Image 1: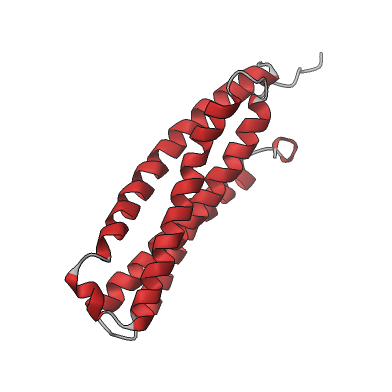
Image 2 (image 1 turned 180 degrees about the horizontal axis):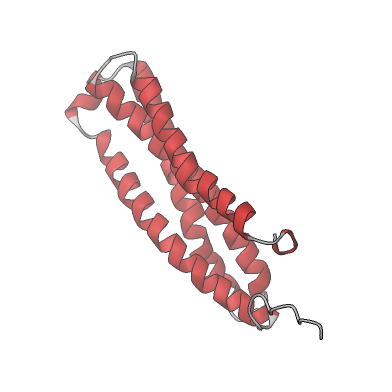
Length: 164
């Protein structure tokens, strides 16, 4: 008697899979959207603070770069909502899910850069010690481990090569 291989995955159509993936993606994006919108809103107020005029030229450049990164991250992380609204009912959900996933990934990379540059600016303003770049670099490494390293490790460790 031969053993039948256990059924893996879900028994769903392409459209059902796209619907499920879309729902999952939107839930994930909600978390990132909230964080990036709060951070971006805070960044927009900094230039109106009296202390801004006393920042060094380098710190003002870091601030401008940080605001632009925050604006780009916000755009990328809100992009899937606009994409869904514009293609809803057009029978392109599987393609929209892939595009929205790419926008989300880009948005998370931009959010990482925004958070790193925000931290750099704040720590430079709080202290002028030489350890600031090392501290920021350590936090960026931590983000990379949490956001990309562990998920990739889990993917490689716990999925079949055929499913990747």
